[in-house]
Image (cartoon, rainbow, N blue to C red; front, side):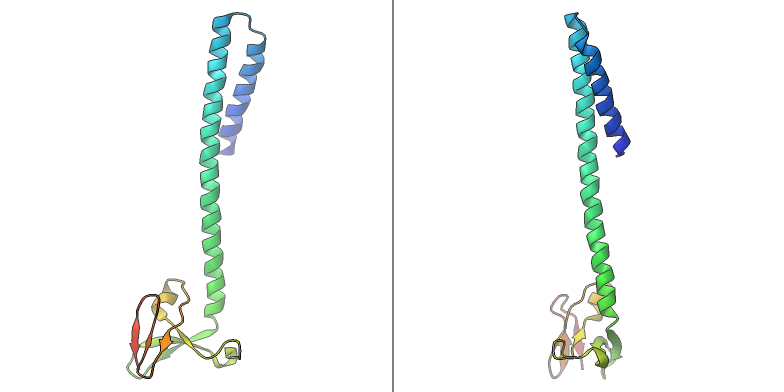
Length: 136
């Protein structure tokens, strides 16, 4: 919905209100008031549509920002093939620190722009989000 439509409806209601104040005939006054109510109702509907569109854009913007943030984080990982032939995303050596110990993230979740740290065992890695299992 366009902002212009809502503005036009409100302007039309104001014009009708200005006209109605000079009307002495009750029937004409009632018709003018009905027109004002119709225009204000249309404006209210247009504004509700705009609010809905606004919130959808806010949510879409949030999701896109999250994807961009994740892509920056994903650059800290490299694709590694394990002995059994499957793949994990391992934290690059230069990114390992006391605050960020060596670990791996799920390749499947990464393809969906999710960062999910895999649980590591002696024989496998497992993703807690999608349950993907990588045998070592």
